[in-house]
Amino acid sequence: MSLFPTFLRPSRCFLRTAALGLSLLCGSVCALESGPVLRLGLSTVAMPATRDPLENATLEAFERAFGRERLVVRTYPVLELEKAIRSGEIDLFLGSAGLSRRVADTGARPLVTSVRPGLEDPNRNEGSLFIVRRDGPIRGIDDMRGLRLAANLPYGFSGYHAALGEIAARGHDPSDFFSSAIFFGKSAAMPEIARAVQNGDADVGILRLCAYEGLRVSDPELVAALRPLPPERPVDGKVACLHSTRLYPAQTISVMPSVSPEDTKALLVSLLTLPAQTGGRSWSVATDFKTVDELLATLSLGPYARPEPWTLERFLRRYWPHVAVVAGLLAALLLHAWRADVLVRRREEELHEAAERERAQRDRIETLQRAGVVGQLSSLIAHEIHQPLAAIRLFADGLVRRASLGSLTKEKIISVGGHIAHDAERARAVVDRVREYARERQPAKEPVDLAHLTVHLRETYPALFTKSGAPTPSESDPLWVYGRPIELELVIVNLLRNAVEAASHAREPAVTVRTFRDGHHVVLTIQDNGPRVSDEVFSRLTEPVTSSKPEGLGLGLAIVRGIVENHEGSIVFERLEPEGILCRLTFPALEASDPSENAIASETAS
Image 1 (cartoon, helix red, strand yellow):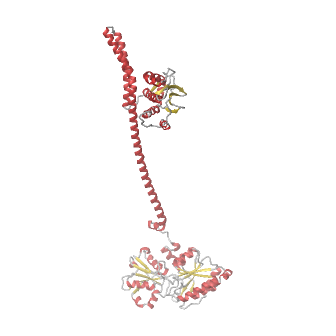
Image 2: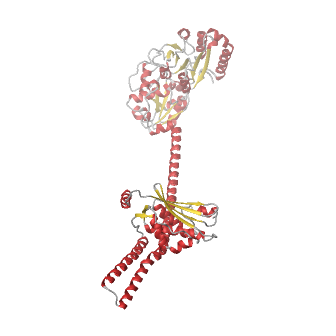
Image 3: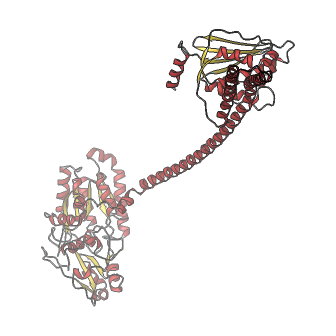
């Protein structure tokens, strides 16, 4: 690409650029000795084809000022040149006055501005011209609102921004003034712009200053179909070309703070002493860039750019990668939360079903246990109620015999009737206790002498004790516990039966029943000499619910264990050597001398 592509033929520009590159390579060592390398950036839209060539003379002026070996030249599109200036890659640059002032905040300062005959004032030799169809109704800027526009570049100074300044001066918002805009993407698109207006592809075109006069020479038929619009406000300065806008400085060479004052002075002298070239173009010094600054401020460009208001569209346009990541994370989080919620609900349902199954199982076990208790209580009823019924029968038989002999007296009737009533009350009490179980009511606990209860069971179940070979328990000091007598009787009878059944397989059956005090506890042990049981059978003794084995421990042990734990006691089985099992029942002992006081204390505590 040529350095100044519109001034010379491509071949000549190419040769010139190549020569500069070779000069830089050959003179790199000398550059280190004579001074730092200076980097010159050229805008691709600088010095368009409608203007006189100034390339050769300008490059020679640079070489005279710095030496060929110190100069590096690069050509940039306008936006890339601005980025290079802001990143510190450029020491000098050639571009529009608008570019020079847009980067003023970087320290860039205009040095010289191009002039030519008819455009002698360096402060007023650049502008824009509105063109419309000659037969169209547009007479001014106000008539353009909502129409279609054709221009060269959306960032061109004289080809676009200068014209927008006039629209803003009329009180309109340039950002949405036109309904649409066609940009041809190059500075030298003046014929294309004019043709778009002529063909009706656009309603309004923007030409750079003096482009209309150039088209009048090169394509008079095209210009004949167009009509330029005059300026609508007073314009300072005079030029030889038609214009619709204020006038501004033209192409400018600017220096950055990285250029030393000595090099700046040498360059300025070299450029200003350069004689006018073909067409009369030369370099001069512009002293008024106020109009450029005002235009940039009006359009909010460069250092005058106002922060774009934060809208949802702008936010998404600028931060869409972050928004996409956050949205993805939120979606993943929501998916995880939904999945966790589903799993939790599913787990809750499983736990609820398990709890329901457990409750139903517990209810069935309690029902079976209560049925078992009631069933096993039938044996207690048989033994408990046998004595009062037998006594009632004997007393009744005695009354009948005395009455038949005529020896029955009133006193005797009263005495025997009292005994019958007492034994009948005993029988009723036994029945009531069983009915309370059947009705699922728990009778109240009371102090129970475990030693006396054991002796009582010997009298109630003499055959059971005879089968076991256990000696008759002897009366001892009271061993008070807090509980329900009928349940404790059931526990002892059940365990005693199991022990008798186990000992029945021994050569000489032996079952021992002992009650004694162990610290703060009352202990009752039942020991048999039955054959050694297997590990599987013995392990069932420690399970909360044993198997429903038709013989042996079975469901009765589950009932026993529940009653013992309900009395805040414990039951432990020990396998003896070489044979036999010891069952140890432990209950909290009542400490007070008067059991009723302990009963009241325990009742209150519970």
